Structures are given as C-alpha cells and as structure tokens.
Image (cartoon, rainbow, N blue to C red; front, side, top):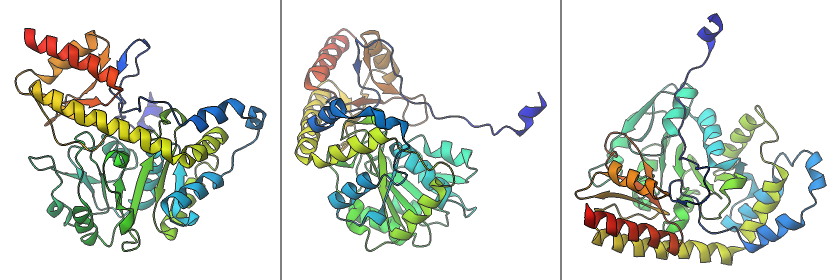
Length: 352
C-alpha cells in the first residue's frame, strides 16, 4: 500500500496492564490505593453536568490559580495538561529542537524515548551507576536538553538537590526538565531552585499522590517566558485540552491539603514496613522514595515471581529489558493488599 510510505512509524509506549477482572490486587501501575479527597467525591456528586455542553476554560484558570497559590509562584509560571504525560509531550515539542541529542538515564520512564522518536528528536541515554544513581558527570557533555525523573522510575531513587543543581549548572544553555511524578512520597522538590535557574522546568501530576489518575491532571512550573512558550505550542494543537470536570475537581483536590498529607503519609509508612518484610524474604532493592519498590530476589528470578503472583491475581510490573529484567516494580497498595502479597510470597518462597 503506497500510502504507508508516508506514515510516521514509531514503537509506542506500553502502559501497565489494566486487568478486566476487578477482583485483583493491582500493584502494577503506581496508582494510589485510596480514594480522592472527600471534597472531590462530594463535589463530583453535586456538580451540574449540564455545563458539559460548553467548552472548558482554555487556560484552566481556577486550577492554575490554586496551584500557583499552593506552590507560592505566579499563575503565569504554571502550565496544566491532561496528565503529566501531556505536559511532558508538549515540553518535548517546545524545548527540544536544537538538533543536538537530548540526555536522559538509560533506566528511566520509558515514554522519553518514545516521544523523542515520535518528534524526531535525537537522544542519548546516560547509564545509571551500579547503585542506580545518576552520575552528574554524564550530563556535562554537549546536548540539546536534559530530562530525568526525581525520584527516578522504576528505581524509586531520589537525587539530592546538590546533584540536581550540578546538572543545572552544567546546562545553562538548554532546558532541564525534572519530572517529579513521585516527589510527594518522601522527596524534596527542586522548586527552591526556580529563581536561580531560568532553564528549569518542574513537572508534577495528580495521578499518584492526589488519587486522581482517572481524571488526567498534570502540571509544570517554570519561569513565565517558558510557560508562555508551552502555551503557544498547546494553543497551536488544541485549545481545549483539559475538560471542565477535571478543572473543577482538581481545584478541590489541591484545597484539601490535610487529606493529601494524610494519604501520602500512609503510603510512606506502608512502604517502609514492606521494605523490612521484603528484606526478610530475601529481596534487595534501592531505597525507594516513591510509591513503589523496585525489588529483585537473591535467588529466584523476577519473571518467575511475576508469573506466580499473577496466577494469584496479584499484578506487579516486570520488563524484559537490559539491566532491569530481574527486578519487579511493586506499587504500594493498602496495608491489607500488601499483607496478602507478602503472605503469598512467604509460602511460595518457602516451597521454592
């Protein structure tokens, strides 16, 4: 078929499995195991959905305003999108156009190379050290931009602000994106560096710590000119990216800070307990500061454990990729869900 000669062919991102069976323990996509803030669910029941006939606010002004207030920045420094993936994809289109390769870790969020291929952006991966940390020296070479998650995914490791700043100092002439999807589970955000570095863009999401993956809300914070450039690209593609419901409920999620801190605290406490119990079962893992643990067993292959868990309707994430094919990424669920998983692993590994 001749028309196929002009098709842009890419290898797409593969998301974690979304099982049709609801009777599963789902620990494979880093969703929050707890519901959104009470104000969110209450408002959702009270909303006048007749307004859905109208287009949403193109600037998502109420949401931008409440985020600016919460993070102590100007509204002109905030950009929102349909999940952080939308924000990141827009940032790739906006800022990575020099023709030089962008840099990101070799073990990281697997959407980065997909966007680079889709938008024809050259890229180079920088190998994580043996302890899974970033080596800032790798980011002191000529490049067209830098992006890395902090904490990283799937390792869960957090880089301190000195490392982030070392990378920023070495790359003043390009945009450096710090993807903070998991920052609320024990990390310190790079927001304090914004005034010092006009090339820093910080991306966060409502999908994990605010329990709203289903509503697709992401945002980024940077200097005003940077955000204007992002909006220019957004409005050249689709002015109405975020729906009315997400905007309204997103505002309510930000306002309930007490619930946000309660839930993230619960997840952190469960994570730390599960780390101890996995260690007793013979697992090793980096010291995660995210809402997941990246674990491998000292003697039993990861794929075998993955399949055994799946047979019990316990879903975790496994990749057949270099360096990480013997590790499992285990999302932190409720205490009850984690106890069920741990009890199965105790029996399975005992017999194994």
